Image (cartoon, rainbow, N blue to C red; front, side):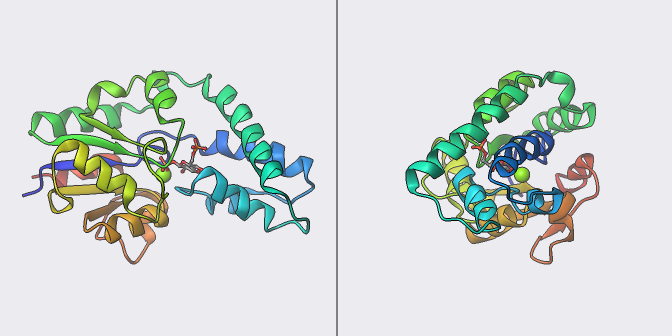
Amino acid sequence: MKKAFIFDLDGVLCFTDKYHYEAWKTVADKLCIPFDESVNDRLRGVSRMESLEIILSLGDKTYSEEEKIKLAEEKNGVYRKLLENMTPSNVSDEVRRTLEELKSRGYKLAVGSSSKNTPLILEKCDLKKYFDAVSDGNNIKHSKPDPEVFLKAAEFLGLGSGDCYIVEDAEAGIDAGKAGGFTTIGIGCAARYEKTDICINTFKDILQTAV
Ligand code: B16
Ligand code: MG
């Protein structure tokens, strides 16, 4: 029997996609690069700098490292301002009740997110209290699909990858989970991905896995 669940943040516990979209669109519009929801979907679970590379590849200009860092900082500035609007109401009762039920069944819970803004999001949404460990973009060198963020989360819990489920919405996150030897649970886009081990429709379906 597994001992823990490691949750992706954006797209699983809460939804910041619209903020990422708005912030990247500000940068893309300034550079006259076409940007829409389908491009935004390709950025799920992908690090900030890799997301920028994907957006810049849709334009025809090349940028120096310095320019790229400035563009990423600009996006993050807009994004963090938007995150300030988040409140605990941005996390559903379904998510909160499921996390509480998993804890009462004795499971350890952790966050495994590519985002360097994880501490701010957890604080704004009052989510920190549910988790025994947090592994995020601030403690890793390699972003998803590399398994580092999840392996670190398991290490912080004092467990091995065989003891933990990963819950993800992004293909890059499922690839990361599989590469690390975890059992993966996919929701949203990841529930339609052929490499996902267990596909669920809605967050509380996790409870059927955790028997
Ligand atoms: P930041 P997750 C990911 O979070 C997002 O899905 C992805 O769109 C974003 O680019 C990445 O975090 C980095 O975020 O710019 O805040 O460091 O899905 O792994 O929780
Ligand atoms: Mg995600």
